[in-house]
Amino acid sequence: MIQKKVCMLGGFAVGKTSLVSRYVQSIFSDKYHTTVGVKVDKKVVKVGDADVTLVIWDLAGEDGLQEMNTSYLRGAAGYLLVCDGTRCTTFDQAVSLQTTLARKVGDVPFVFMVNKHDLSDQWTIAEADLKGLEQRGWTVVKTSAKAAANVDESFTHLAAQMLLSDRQRTARAIDRGRR
Image 1 (cartoon, rainbow, N blue to C red):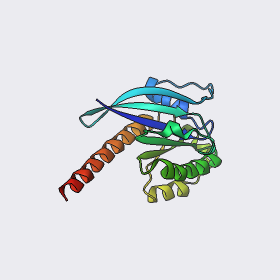
Image 2: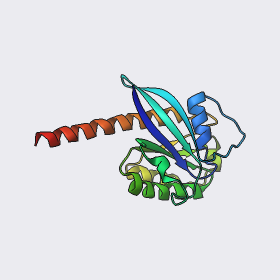
Image 3: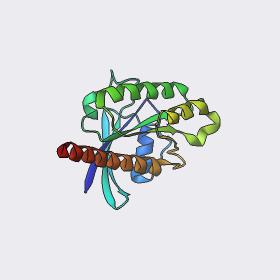
């Protein structure tokens, strides 16, 4: 069985823990629980003919990596970057965080989740900003932990990206070996 470490990253109260609970346990709670440090969960997802165990590290919300213990990121095969659609500041923080992550962990697959789509009438993030990220090659998914919208799809998409990344690395290594 294939096992991949995935980190959930984003600001305070964007819904990271709720997204993990929805994905792993199919539950949602309106009660806010602050994550202290890291909480680890697992779930097996089917990608093509492969079973992939996602080891999901739900990291405490931070405004930037300078405050986060970057050792939590070690060994991550991918990450889910979450912002709250009703708070544009969390969008800006997440975009900035991704730039820092790219420097610290390199080019690993990620999915940008804009959470709380059930409150889309209260969103403060412009559609043009989301389109701009997509034009940069980012996978942007509008999610709702409460309504279970696009949560499973986000995790499955990331798992598929991680497997593809593995195959591409293997192909490059084989190519180098032939030279």
